[in-house]
Length: 334
Image 1 (cartoon, rainbow, N blue to C red):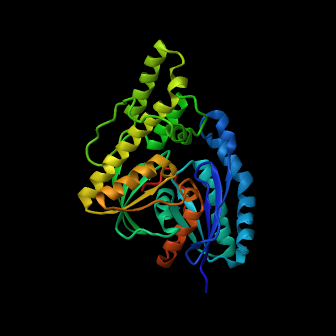
Image 2: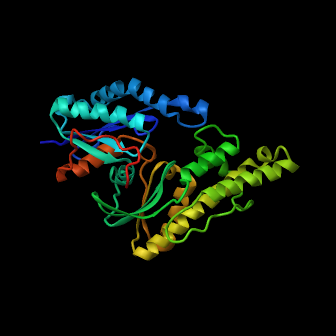
């Protein structure tokens, strides 16, 4: 008998659903909310309203695309947190109600753990234990992954996430939200060694990105005093230099973590894992240190339900099921 799971993701500004059959992701349908571009960031109230508008259509489209019905489902996996409370409530309430109505299990999924387990959607898959660098707009962590249910946080950011550093830097440069991809794009034509920015020196495997954002801010203010068009005239080199510093900070800690643990199975996860320079630098390090590296396909790096459905599949044999009294956790601890 086939195990068919429906995954539902609504932690931020993506309404997404996915069907996973016996561990194979069948589809990954996403409704993106473009309204936030006008505000330079995600507006929580607008996000939750858009989820309410989209969720029924997205889920029905997902089931139709997979050629199944609600009655075919074995279980439902849903993001419990972390994320925006209003956004989480929409997806979680729908999943909880559907689970009760169909009398099938509901599986709670931690959003960041699902990002890590997205590395198991396609081949090749990492071997346990492995290290995963999770990089997104809200998180920057180094995780030791012992198994699907056992993960240990080795390092975290003490202030801002690297994805926020990309987006805030992009805002200073005049790019629209989300700005991280624009920095990646413009950096391709720039000299990454031209400008220097202050890198925070945090002990151990933790990160700090508040200092480099401040460094960029004062650098741009100082340069524009002498040349009002400095940003426009040097945009490629600024992007390349700023990006190189951010990625360098990530890679230094990842090398340290590998050396300390002796683990050479290395994975990436999270929205910033889509950055082309980060992928390139990881590839170079894998050759230098003889690592086996794994990076999810681009569509599974940003928020998506495929990773939620796949995580549900991995949890299903352990009877890791939710209760009707469970609720979303916007600050869900790792």
